[in-house]
Every structure is written in structure tokens, then in C-alpha cells.
Image 1 (cartoon, helix red, strand yellow):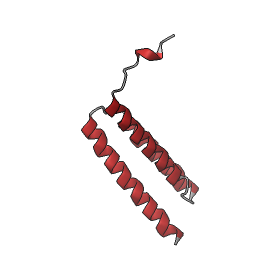
Image 2 (image 1 turned 180 degrees about the vertical axis):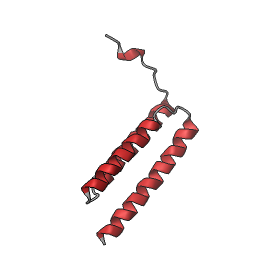
Image 3 (image 1 turned 90 degrees about the vertical axis):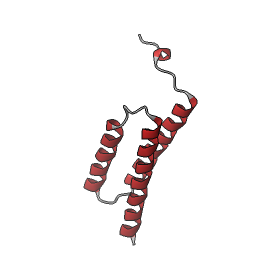
Length: 87
């Protein structure tokens, strides 16, 4: 049985970046759950999962910050689209 202590320990910057990524992930899914059309909602969920999964190997702080910025912008665009569809 493998010990959890054998995993690479994160430094403070890496830990904080990881927390930001997890926060964005949760917020993306909370927003997607507000999409009224079920097929669109499922498609968006799969897209978000794939996007996070495809980028989880990155360890460069600058690259992660850049992807976080892009993710936040995409989330804001999604929120704006939802607000327009509610009107």
C-alpha cells in the first residue's frame, strides 16, 4: 500500500495556485448547472472536464496563471451569455 507521503509536496505558491484552479473548476460547474438546455449543459460539462484534464500536467507557474486568466475570462463570457438568455 502506497503512502500519501511519497507524493511530491507542494510549496506555498503551488498550493495557492492549485486552490485557485479548484475554485475556478467549481465555479465553472456551478455556472454550467444554470444552463437551461440539458444537451448544451452536458456538452459544456464535458468540454470543461476535458479542458481541465488536458492541462493538469502543467507545472510552470506562468503557464498556469495564463490558463487561469483564460478560464476566468471564459467563465465571465458564459455568465454574460446566461444573463442575456434570461432577459
